[in-house]
Image (cartoon, rainbow, N blue to C red):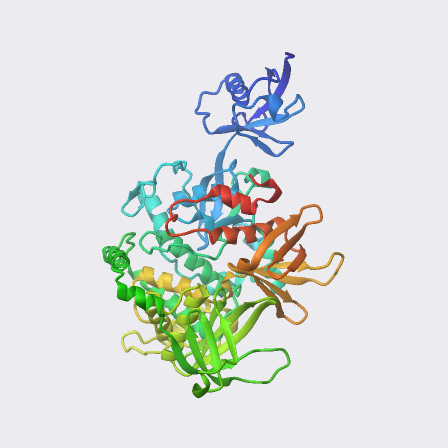
Length: 630
């Protein structure tokens, strides 16, 4: 077989060094090429992390048994022998910048898994990487350097179980410096000065929010394939807002960073929330900040471990003690009966709430003109299975409303239910939440759901304490609420809870408002200049008309039959039940990002408690990879 010369650059020889030329044949395998290059370089070092990068094809050659002929490599190929793991500057949700070695040759999905394993985050599938917003530097800011915490000496992650020391990864416990870095990741950081917050990028409208989502990296391709270089800066952020299997004592870093991302999203007005919600968030932020300054970092709190083990024992005991009476009670599920008010918002309508007699049985709400007519046919029945439930509450204004988005053939039907007092609201809200998941009032979680709702309402009550009295001047409102609520700020007190439970509460509350929606500018007809916005949430798609700012249609994933992408014209087509078909093109982002969002949320819905420790990477790429699926 003919012998020919192949040029291979070696990164260790320097950028100015000419490529090495080695004599090869077409049946030589990739491993043999690497061996020849290493021998000719005459550099003695560990080459186990190195691999060949094919510059023209933007492709890694990671299969050492493949021959040059099978890879399609000829004499004109430009190859480079380079490390697979290189330093990268990662901006955490809290704003801390870590310089660490990450994998440049694996798909982003697996690279993030390695990052999260080193940082002791059990749920890497919820996060991804994106490019930062380009900052316009002023002349006077040229010399201002950013503080970067270097942990490039950390060992490369492997398939072995992560070793913990004092509740943190063993690597971080080796020196006081690395231990301090882990504590910064696991404990909420003090709010920066108002001047610093004012300099940060802030979206002003929904179109700017849509542009942010165009910066996500492709999870199916590697960093080097997407133009990321050594020491570049990327943001590590929660991408899919569907949080699974939260355990406070095991998810210290995960919860803290989730809290920080939610906090900054509120301060920079990336989340739209009511004034009452903003005040509750401000109170929780203030209390979490105060506790984090005084409380010593403990990765594993004995009291919380005892509580968690007790809850698990109770759960096992309840599952094992299902008597005939319990089964009978489950078969005959309890019901709710009460007078409530209902309102169906429509455009150009001035009609308000009307009072009816409501009954809640199984997962269905029925209402009648009065209690006496409840034996007759109801005015309407609404099955809440698969519906969207959201609170619309103001304790100060004695407003206790439940907002329901109920699936229908043409999208989602919006309904508001108004309760008279807290107790009534807690019961009906808990029932609606369970029904949306397909559960009845007989479910064992009903009472705990009622209690959690009552706890949330209790947080909104102002309960002055003499020992914690604060004046408006002593609280930095700029670090607690967004600019539009600065003048309306009212100090609120919240009951004292354990630090990690505060974080859990904050994250759960944030998940009840539109934190879960990612926006994309779209067009629904080819050649049409009218832009609309598509909102992608963890369980539904939302079509928003920019001209009037209203939600036009809502479709849920559980009614989706299939979705396809025409990669030539960059158009996404989705088919729903009832012969409903939509097709749209993306304006502000590549259609691959939208495709990945939809597939990613469907992948998240496949997670279960039994499979909580396993991650089906192959399924993720099948759902999100498109025509380049691995």
